[in-house]
Amino acid sequence: MATQTIETRSRKRITPAKAKTAAIGKAKAIAPDLAARIGSTPKTKFRGDPDVFGRLVEDHDRHRALLAMIEETQGKSPDRQTLFLELVKELKSHAAAEEQALWSTVLRDPETTDDARHAIAEHKEIDDMLADLAARDMASPGWLRRFADLRQEYLHHIREEEQEQFVAAQKHLKATDVRYMRRIFNRRKKEGKAVAKIEKKISLKD
Ligand SMILES: [Fe+2]
Ligand SMILES: [Fe+2]
Image 1 (cartoon, rainbow, N blue to C red):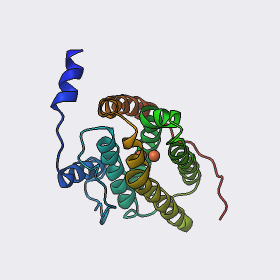
Image 2 (image 1 turned 180 degrees about the horizontal axis):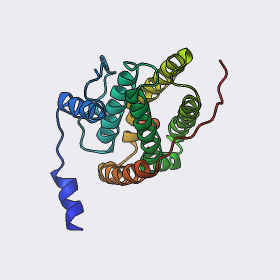
Image 3 (image 1 turned 120 degrees about the horizontal axis):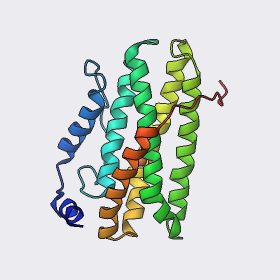
């Protein structure tokens, strides 16, 4: 299709700084008055890249910003509620689309199966942590402490993806594949975010 050809050919690498600013801007649009102090980010060669890995890092930066912004909120404020809902929708739709666009293919290659399994297992852990947080009172003193645990877990997950699993996966994938995967990811993420729902389930101990 002509439009697909245009999209794959016209996409250019943008600078890492521009890519990061744009991603943070998407998070800031939810609550423009809150600071998004994401600090320094782990080094990755994929930020600003025109293929699927650059697109995934763009989401990761957006998530880093949402996580930082939620830590700026108080009690059961409208900002905390709106940002948490956005975070849940973002993380769920990102993880599902990432599994469909990237990890399902990586899983098929015996040399990279373990990387895909690792990433998918962590998605499940993160999903459980989100459901646990959603089931608890946002105004309680323990909520932000539990949220800090989720933030740490998620930052660990995306750092590993960017620095280890994406690097390993890229070596085994063709350039045309990673470009095509970007389109699949975008479509699945959009569809998934539109129907993403908050699940509430206390599953973690103190
Ligand atoms: Fe992931
Ligand atoms: Fe990811």
